[in-house]
Image (tube, rainbow, N blue to C red):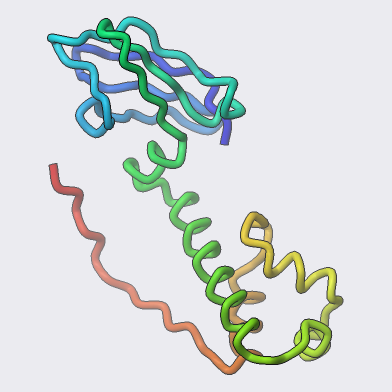
Amino acid sequence: MKIESVEPNNRKRVFIVRTAYRTLEFPYAKADIPPTPADRLVRVYVDPEIANEGFTWILESGREDTLHIDHVLSYNEDPAYKAELLIHRLTVEAQDLLAASGLSKREVSRRLGTSPTQLYRLLDQTNYGKSLPQLLALLHILGYEAKIEISPRRTATV
């Protein structure tokens, strides 16, 4: 996800991060090198060196830090980000189970009723276009099942 703009709000002591989809806040206090009254913020900008997927700030002392959009999404508990994280975890687990199973990828794709190319897409952890039912079917073929547990969210501690 690309960041369109970022600006500081010193009154609320947060960075205001704007993407194409929404505006999010990230508190200074959660940063590794936070701006403080003793070491004020000099400049903040969307960082092109990380493909506009993060922002960098510079303090009066010359110290600087960069924050990726994933940290902002995680802090704000973005539902789409959480869903992608679940798919990523299941994909990595499926890769490990496939390697340990001894089954060939051709056999697994045959049992899934799909092409080897589609299986490779399913096993690609950077591909978030796959569906949860596809991953669950793959795990089933590998001899495993996934259980989804519903529990109350833990509240963030301040």
